[in-house]
Length: 419
Image 1: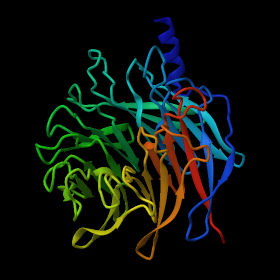
Image 2: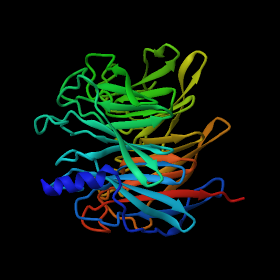
Image 3: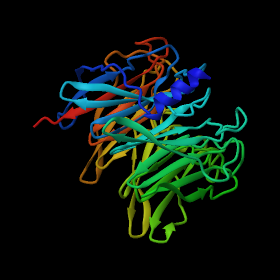
Image 4: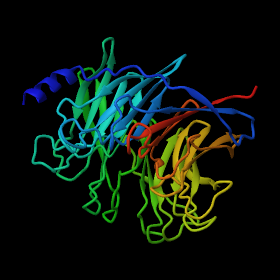
């Protein structure tokens, strides 16, 4: 108990400052139609330990990057932590490690993360919230940057939350709104998206989106949010084929959140898994279908939908230029005119690759294919963490062994225009 009390006092300020560690950039060859030169930085935690799984989730905003260590053991196992890096002229420097003030074993703090400005949001999908062990209600933690560092400023748990909802499996923040997924996978139609709004007094629960179909399973496992639009995937939707998949698009109006628009692949079929990953930026939505078979069994593809006055319509289908069976191309991240897609990011001998697409006058063109310079098998490159901001892309490899067995790593890619 004394140790827990000491830790609580330490994390009341919410940041465990780490020894500064600066990563070094190395040039990476790119398959670029525009001649851009790409640079790779590999980040590892300064206190890397076996089974940390650093890089299971990551997010980036400007010159700040956050990545989780869900396997971090505060007491015995999987309580979790989040590492904060800041980019300076000399490179990326580790500046803080965030731990929940009420951390417990198996919380999986860091299952999801996001950052905007001076606010970091962290999901802890197995948090029990004072209930019985393994209640797995989940929670969302908010950290705020102050002059003295990062401080835990709120813990968000919706009123009436039930056991096994796994709140925090996915989280996003944009402006004064936080959205978090609670897939409730054991109940058909049980998934929800909870919404909070920032007011002067803090964060208040302001909405809840529920699965629009009682037959949906794992609704809200994957979501994205850009401030005005929430997209939610359901890779197991069966309307056009067994596990063909679907996506739901919610838009905000002055009256609240409109009823969802359901989208599906125009050529969808059994096992495509459309909606297994979704991203939104303005009037564009990218949807991964990692099970699609265009270039061989489970080669994968990405669909682009665009909003017009008449609604959302598919405008493009993307396949990797070197796609092949078993690539599972389809984990997506989107920011303006730049789209990142991961292929081969599973627990297989495929080392994984990041494909970068640029929107050139309405056509999405493959601009680069990137993979780690120290490439190795079974590192889960991009399997979970993939984030983008202003041309910088972060990719997690949470089975990487550089610091220790399965300690994990995050690769950061940025382009230098050839002009």
